[in-house]
Image 1 (spheres, rainbow, N blue to C red):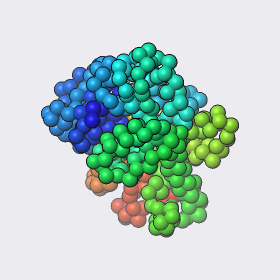
Image 2: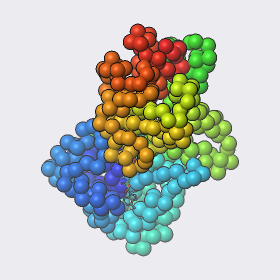
Image 3: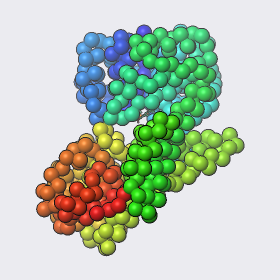
Length: 432
Ligand code: NAD
């Protein structure tokens, strides 16, 4: 099938490369010329395991190409995915400007039937607006369908998630749209949920909001554990073994971030309120998440007594391991609060350094965790990269000014840390 993906970011590039890999002819479009020029040379602008090879292989086989011309993409393809950003406005509402722009341009370029698919995460009823926008700009009166096909991939394991999804959600209004999308995804042999467009849009917002709720729930429980001497990891284990609950997303810590949970939660709250329903439960989920970052900062303050003038090593800037994405990362708020308190920061992340250097000013970026620890009064774990689990802690202890680790992700064993001579402060477990 001939496919066009508009927006070549984390979702668009993975979608394009994977659809090409299962045998389609895919053209990926972006307005960012620099990004497209890099991609044409086989240079991947983001860190995502396995993506570079997949892109190169499919370019070589002439199944994957890149362009800045939306007209070219729409001209060559029957199925057109919209995968542009839907960032939050100041009030939390999803900013759908990019989606509208793309819908208008697609309408102007169409010369024969096109299936326009929302891949971006959008609030319910966006499909109606996309249809309206295409209709009023469709001067040639070309037949078209709109569909919703939300994406559930996770950065860091995006290719596996796309190729082996738990389910594929397809929101359609016509037999033709349904047939085209089920045919497109057939090689994945995945379970498909076929529904109307509005239900598909809500499935995405509800899923992300539910997962965020699970995280905030265990974070709230961790605060009770801490006050009583219970261990939140044991509590999570005991809860998670119940199949009705499940053990994923039950890791207590310094809160969630990234380009999905915070903004999708906020957008779901906003659209609910616009529709006349106050989703107070989700407002509390947001509040708990904000509190967790402040709790980590208080733990650092309480452990150091005076923060002003102290040096703090920060390990992890990306919003989670295995990505270079720092959008809405907890590290940004935590570093800002520490800088405000007068601390000096020495930070390291295995993949996010170049993105972080563009956004965070006034801190020292280090070449590895050991350089971050050197001369620091405290080492703070903000992202649970695997390489931080394997640090030479004896060496770290020697490099630190005092043996103090504040662990916002609970990656070490408190008893082992005590044995090594650290003061170890963690989340929802007794500290050493
Ligand atoms: P991104 O910012 O990485 O990529 C968006 C791309 O769209 C950018 O490269 C931008 O230049 C391009 N773009 C903007 N306007 C354009 C236009 N008019 N024409 C062509 N290109 C244009 O964003 P992302 O992380 O890939 O997210 C895209 C959507 O997918 C969002 O709605 C997001 O919520 C959703 N989503 C993201 C993830 C994730 O893990 N990142 C997962 C599931 C869903």
